[in-house]
Image (cartoon, rainbow, N blue to C red):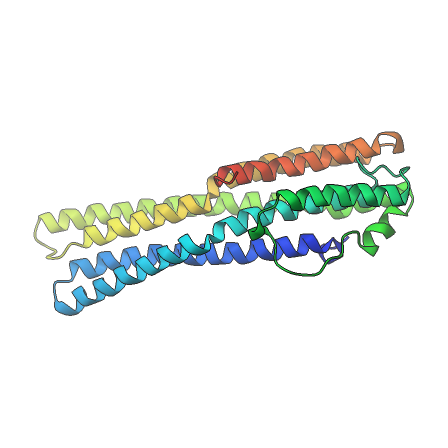
Length: 283
């Protein structure tokens, strides 16, 4: 099942989350760039630099007001929470996982799905949705649910568990590499700042380059904290390890235990996302 075959609630909340993420990251970048620009203008001792400094502070205030008014990070976190919760429900329904076992009549399964989805929507903030239609149970979900156990098992293992396993593995590796790269960059900036301070003390430099580098270091550290490369690297590594164990268990699952095994797998996937939200300070 592709993402475009999931309920429209998933696509709507996914769109809201991605839009919020882009806006938040863009706003954060502008804040940090303007902070460095203010430091540069501050060390240049002439009228044009002072006028530029005023403009930079005005721009900074405007960016802060925009972030405060729009709160794009809330749309990012809330939209992602609703999207992942909807995706979990859809996969449970489509492959006969609890609470939608395959022996449950279709009408009752659909009613139970709609009730669960309604509960999610009641709890979801308005920022987590973008208008995109009203479909709930899709033809692809019903089609997969109607297939025999082996077909549902194969689809779930390959398209859901293995897909998530590849995603977490790739993300873990990428975040570990980025964390190491940013650590080296920050150490390099610290070294340059120390050198600039010594040169200023000895009279080789006649302007405050160390102050500019301090601003660069502060901006780099703030960006490193926002992106949380180290935290995400550890979390994704743990999730990938847990999913590899789940993958092996699902490969040997029988029809009798299938519904609960799917529920356990989805709980593991949801648990990682819950930890992600908590690390972002989202409730």
